Image 1 (cartoon, rainbow, N blue to C red):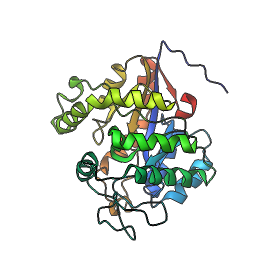
Image 2: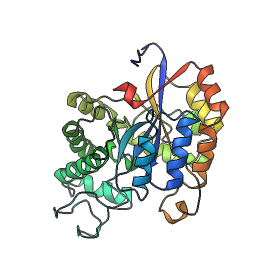
Image 3: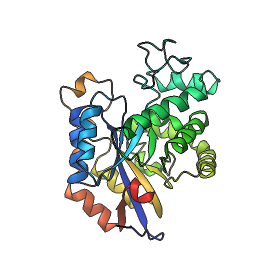
Image 4: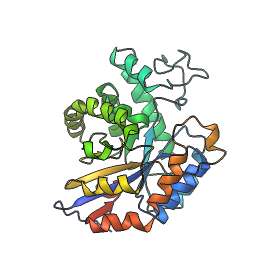
Length: 297
């Protein structure tokens, strides 16, 4: 069915990251879609529960599936033996990406990472999803590495080559009132505010490449701390246009305990929120229309 968007209202894409991380995360994402407000998810091509995620995605036809491109924290998907500038140990065999975003960023801005490698790895990850029959509706990146122009440019080339029509806009409004009473979020607020100067460059590059993107993203600062109060504040202050809410639902089970992630208990809290009647009521009360990335494209 063709969805006609009313550009005078507020629309929200609720995207669950880390699809494929664990079976518990996969199960939670599908539950948050079937019984909650999640409309889209991004799948990790190198996730340990990739096959399980693909099976769940193909049986949940309304869930819009994108590629969660991994350039930090994990292992590459592509084959061959290219110059491994993206790998922390400098060796392609059994190599891993940098675990720290800071380490990756320092090398990136100093010109130490080959843009062609980024494009090749992103292409390999997208193609892995497409090989399963999944129609990849959009892209985002783990830890939002495409904030940096040095990642964005090759990622846009990969998107065009693979026929992916849309990409996350990792920039958006952050109101100080949302974090004023949450000291744990001040550090993340400072980082997001500092990097916001790259937003105009992002928009020009994406528009020039012919790739669709929402007006921005909300919820990044709240990652790991999202609850009903923060969710309501975010929705209440949502501007007109099309926005994306980033979320990370999951089950904090034994398998998640073996994964390197700072998001554990918070995943279960988010799952409860995303499937609660309260979340839908907050959206309805504010006149916010839920859409998916598939409908954006």
